[in-house]
Image (cartoon, rainbow, N blue to C red; front, side, top):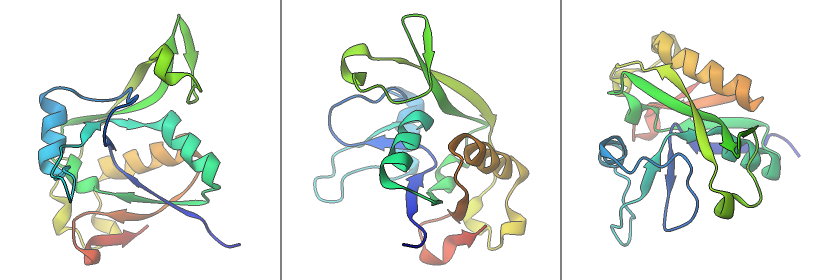
Length: 165
């Protein structure tokens, strides 16, 4: 078996009910939904939106044996001066850095790390050398936390807007 690619969004979404520790049930979440066109293709139902959840992403990487990552929809975060990443959860005064099996019943509180946004129109970028330093820092942060390299970056909705890193 060769490489196993995992594809993820630069932020988090969820369809339907269930646990979503980083959900933004506010204006920021609505902005993500509108900018990212986060509505069901068939039903038009609004997706729930939130900041990236690293414990959940680490769990998905582990379960699927992911060796390389592809980050989609980085351009959706273009207008944010600060973005956030959930690095771990807090529950009953304890810090946990993994997805708890009983996440529904315990409802852990996400601990968020602030990251400087890039405030650049990524859809105009055509080479990796044009990636703003703030996005390079975000990618490096994610790679360090996830311990998996990000090999491709989507900077717009068109196929040609995918960069090899």
